[in-house]
Amino acid sequence: MEDQATLYCLALLGTVPGGQAEELKQEIAVRLKGLGLELGKDVSLFEGDLVHFKPAIDRCSAALCFSAQSGGNPHNEAAVGQLIKRRIPLIPVAICKDNFSAEFPGKLGGLNGLEMKAGLGSLAMALLEGASLLPKQRRVFLSYRRVESTNAALQLYAALSARQYDVFLDTHDILPGEHFQEVLWQRLCDADVIVYLDTKEYFDSRWTKQEFAKATMRGLCVLRVGWPGVDSKAEQTACGEVHLSKESLNSLDQLVDAKLNEVMDMVEMLRTKSVAQRYSRLIGKLRNSIEEYDGEIVGYSVRRSVIVKIAGKRIVAYPEMGVPTSHALHEATLDFHMLPVAVVYNQAGIKDRRWRAHMEWLNESVTEQVRLISTDDACSEFIEWPETHNVA
Image (cartoon, rainbow, N blue to C red):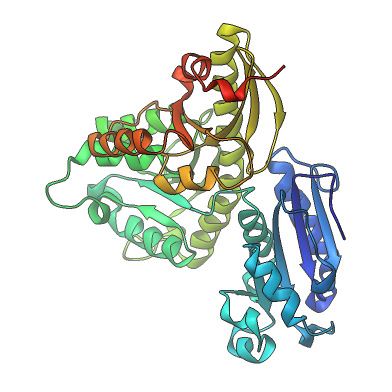
C-alpha cells in the first residue's frame, strides 16, 4: 500500500478482536468528523498485515497493531523494525493486558500499548494522537470554589489523572514562590477543556468569574458540573453539562461512580471539539492578519500546518493551539519543508514572564530553522521572511 492522496494515513494492522473492526472504523470516522475531516477523503485507513503498510514518508501516520491471538498473522519483525526506525507510532492493542508479553513477544512488546477493555473510543483517540491529528498532551483545568467543592475537585483530579490527563488544580500545581495568577492563567491558556464545579456561590468569586471569562476568550470547551439546586448562569457558553442531584453526591460530597464516569466521558468528547474550535479560531486570526497585506492561505500540509502566500513568499506555518514549547518548535522542523518554518499561536492571555523570556531567548537561537510568531504579528513577520522563500 503506497498512499499518495491524503496527508494522514491511519492503519489497523492484524485482526480486530471480537469482530469489532466496523465499529472501530465508525468510531474513528466520528472522531475525525469532530475535527472537520472525512475518513477516506482527508484521512486514509489501511487494513491488513503490517508488512504491507508502507505510508509515504511525507505523511503523518500511525497504526493500531492487534495480536495474532485475535486470528491474524504474526507481525513481521523486520517490517516492525522499519516502521519504528521511521518513527511511525505503532500502538499494540492486547486482548488482555495481563497477557501482553505473550500476545506481543517481539519488538512490539517493548512499546507502550492498550487493551481492548479501554474501549473503541480510547483506541480511536490514541490513533489520532499518534498521527498528530490531536495533540498528544491531554490537559484539563479544574475550576471550583475551595470552600464548597474541594473534595469533589480532588476526586476529579485523581480520576482524570488516571486517564492520562494533565490536570491543573491550584492546590497541587503552583509551587511556593511562583506568581499565583501568572501560573494559573498560563495553565488555563494551555488547557483543552475547563471543568467548572458550579456550586451555589461559584460565580460570587471574582477569580472564578475571571477563569470562566478567560476560558471563553481562548475558545476552550467548558463543561459544567451542576450542583443540586443550582441553576446554570452560563447556558449559552457551556459546551456540555452534567447535572447532579442530591443522590449524585456521597457523604464526602464526592460524585458517585455513575456521575464520575459521565464527567470522564464528557471531557473526552469535548476535548476533540475544543481542538477543532481552537484550530478554526487560530487559522481565522492568522488569515485576518495576513490579509492586511493581501496574503492568503493557499494550502494545507501535515500536522494541521498551513501554507501561506504573502509578499511573494511561500511559508509553512504550524498552528499551536495552546502555549508553545521548545518541543513544538523542534517538531515543526521535521517535515521536509523549506526552513525556516513558523509556529503560530494565539498570545491572548499568556502572561507568564519566565515563559516569555525563555521563548524569546530560544527564538533568537533557532531563527534559521523555525520562528515563533503570534497571530497578531504574523503579517509583519512574514513580510520580513528570508528571500529564499520567494516564489515566481
